[in-house]
Structures are given as C-alpha cells and as structure tokens.
Length: 122
Image 1 (cartoon, helix red, strand yellow):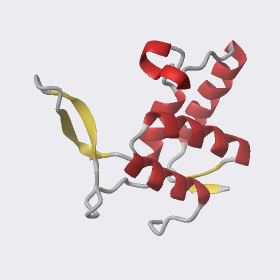
Image 2 (cartoon, rainbow, N blue to C red):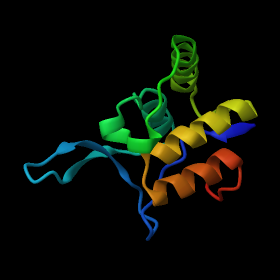
Image 3 (cartoon, rainbow, N blue to C red):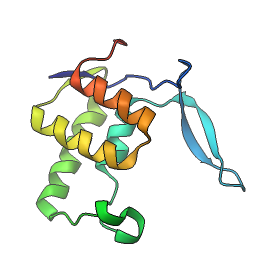
Image 4 (spheres, rainbow, N blue to C red):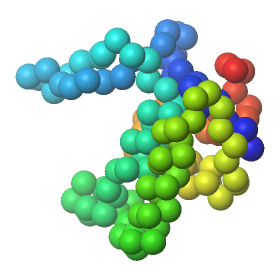
C-alpha cells in the first residue's frame, strides 16, 4: 500500500505538532521548528528497544537479531523515502504495533489512519 510518509501530525485543534528537541528542567518537552511526521515516528518506533520490562512492563519484548535486522532494513527504506512509500501489509502491521506501544492516543489515531490509507491529509 502507498503511504504518505510525510504526513504531519496535528493537535486536536488542527495545528501542526513540532518535533521534540529536548526537555526543560521540569521535564516539559521543548518543541523544535520541524514538524513531527509519520516518517519520524516510524523511524523512532522501529529503532526503539522495547526489551526493558522496567520501562515497557507487560509490553516488553525480546526480539531476535534477525528481527532487529529486518526492522533496521525497514528503517533505512523509510528514511530514504521522499514523500510516499509502498509498504506490504506485514510492514504496516509491524509499524502499527510498535507505534501503538510508543505513542499517545492522538498520535496513534492519526498514524493508524495514515497507514490504513483513510486519512484526509494527502
């Protein structure tokens, strides 16, 4: 399926969400100038280590070197994509699983719609 990898995530009132560039002393995220896109989210999700049970609880998972290799290869493919990318259903399913573990409900909602091809933003 063809995916718009440059989809820009929006706040509930429709404003673009900016990438987080760090945190202030109170732990509040600091927004950068670049928009937060599906491409960024996919790269973050594919390269997150979900194996620590203290951090991920029941969602913690140990994956094989082969699965890490596949995630790395998909990460490189997504990184190289300029605007749209064709992904097989298996890769979309993996991305949805990882994004669901990593992200907030508003981001998951928009990401799933975009990955399913039902989003209105092109």
